[in-house]
Each structure stands twice: as structure tokens, then as C-alpha cells.
Amino acid sequence: MFVLVHGAWQGAWCWSRLQVSLRGLGALSIAVDLPGHGEDRTPIAGLTLSDYADRVIQVLDGIDEPVTLVGHSLGGATISTVAERRPERIAGLVYLCALLQPSGATPADLHRHDPDSALVAAIEMAPDGSATSIRPDAAAELFYGDCRPEDVRTAIERLVPEPIGPAMSTIDTSAERWGSVPRAYVRCDRDRAIVPAEQDRMIAEVGVDVVVEMASSHSPFLSQPDALAAALVEIRDGTA
Image (cartoon, rainbow, N blue to C red; front, side, top):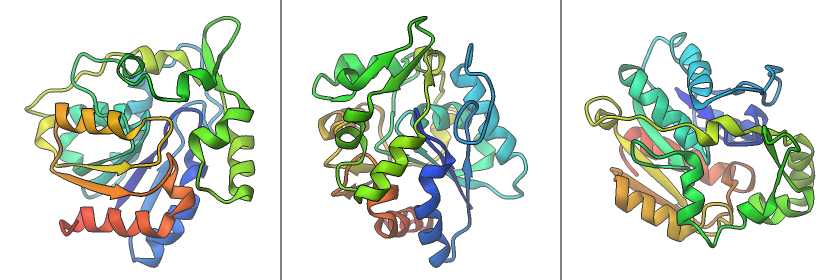
């Protein structure tokens, strides 16, 4: 079973094409709407990374077997937090062009290391400082550079404000718990949000067991769902 955790501003909807491709390979999956995203109407004020992890843990605790937990972008911080709290529920972690940061870091720390990212210039802060949004005119190049135009339009329409709390939350992991779970990284070499050099830095600094390369933008679940599904199955089966 794959459990799919989206990144900032998005929702479970972003995984729909990938889930079709996974089903075609005989793989079951569940896509999670984090609080305040997708179909979830939780007010976003005051949300933290721990709240995101709580939602994923609710899903894991309802599944009878360990899962392969996939996190995209900011979802990498979420799955790291989940793995620290429930390592026994996870067969493997997959970081999909995602944040892979050491204990004590915050997701926001990424921006200090990644000056080539187009993300900061695309962000608009809410007047009260409680949330951020992505400028629609910047989202296509930032997230969806190799996606079909119709998919880009639909995705941009579904982006929602992202609470500031999760990005400012400290990631707390240990070698004994999070470090006991096998880890893979799917590196996307056309990513404009988390550029390949930054993906490489995180991989080298934190360490993973497997690296899979994709010639894709930040959203291979939309642009290359069949190839991504095949890669995820290979990672799960230990054949990547």
C-alpha cells in the first residue's frame, strides 16, 4: 500500500493520475488531504507540521500493514515527522523532489540554501502574515513546466493558501526511529521549486538508500504518472 502526502498549497487531488497508473500496476494507494487542503475544511490558522503528521497517522493507524509513505515537496517534512512517531507503521519512505532535512531544521530553512529556486519570488504573503499563496502567473513555470496545458489550468485553480506554521515548525527526528526506516529519493532534474542542486545537497547531507532520477518538473505525478508509478513500485519491491 502506498500512502501519498501532498506538498504545500496542493491537495490529494494532485495524485489522481498517479493513482490510476499505480492501479494499472496492481498497487493500492491512498491520497491524504492534509488539514485545510483539498476537500478538508479545517481552518488553517494555527496549523503546524504536527497537525499534518496527525492526519497522516490517522490514515496509517487504519491500515493493517506497513505502508510505503510518499511525500512530495513540503510533504517530505511531513513524512519525516510521521516516521519519527510511527516507524513501525512504515515499510519505506519516498521523498519525491521533497524536503529531506536533518533534525532541528525547519522547512523554511531550505530557502537559505536554495537561492536558485524560483519559489520565493512566486510567493505572496497574506496581509496578516498567517499564510502564503502562489501567484497564478508564476505557478505554471514553477510547478508544472512539463505538464499538459489543461492539467496546468486545473491544478492552478485548485491551489489553496498554505498556513505559515508548518514551514516554521522544527523537524524532530532520531536515528533510532526515523533513521530505522528505509529511505529513497526521487530526484527531478527539471524542478524549479527545489532545484536539482538542492536535492543533491539534501541527499548528501541526510542520506538515503536509493536515488531514482526523473527528467521531470516539480510535478511528475501529473506529467509522467506512468513512469513515476513504475519507479515507486520498483522502490517498494527493492528493484530500483
